[in-house]
Image 1 (tube, rainbow, N blue to C red):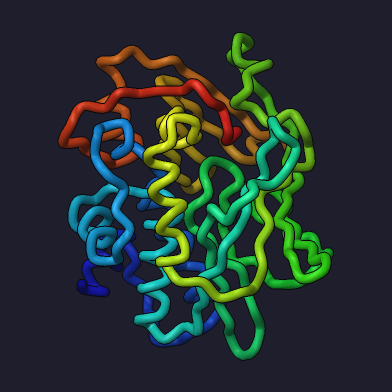
Image 2 (image 1 turned 120 degrees about the vertical axis):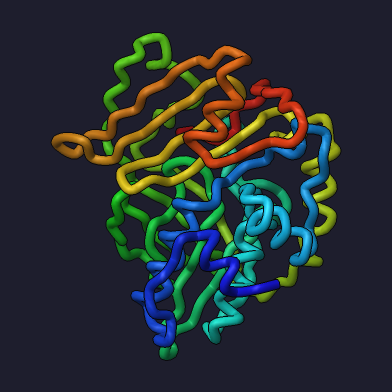
Length: 290
């Protein structure tokens, strides 16, 4: 595996000799704008592999995306190769329909320590829940970013990530009441602890979410990519684009229902993805919101 190939994949050409917050932020932003969050292999009849070598080949050489177990694993490797003090963590994702966090650890995220100060770094959460900058590991502090105001809170050793979002302007009236839109201004995202993890801790989770007929990943095909001004999302056959703060503290959210013949071109031109096998788009379980 070649670190230079990784940097070419994310389009990062800036100096990286300083292990500081600026370098970490720039690498994170380049990655989230180059590598989509996506689970399309599941809906193409192919596995989502867990090993670092397979992940590198899939994302860097084949120019695909992946879910958190792949994308954040790759980021962990790259940051470690540069010399950043990086730790894998595990999180439980908030399930709005059930009004609770997942019972098991299903999300991989990272902690990076710079000069004794700890930050949460995550390059693999879809749509507008994606952070654009590392979050200082401080409880109860509002941390405004372009997508939203993020906030970490700690209680009895468990940390909670939440955000406060803007109002939304939705020109497509048929989508105003869609389950794809977050109805609450304050959104819970996930909880986590600071216990160090390894990729092997997620092996059973990876298998479950690829094989279980009740898994959100088997029931919904997803693709999400951040841009300079917002985020593109594809859920089943519905294409969404959110432009952050397009006027007066309001986000613009536009939707389009794609025909089957349009999906391949959208994946190529919007998300930079070329599929080698046929995608069977699916959306029978809305878990994530735009």
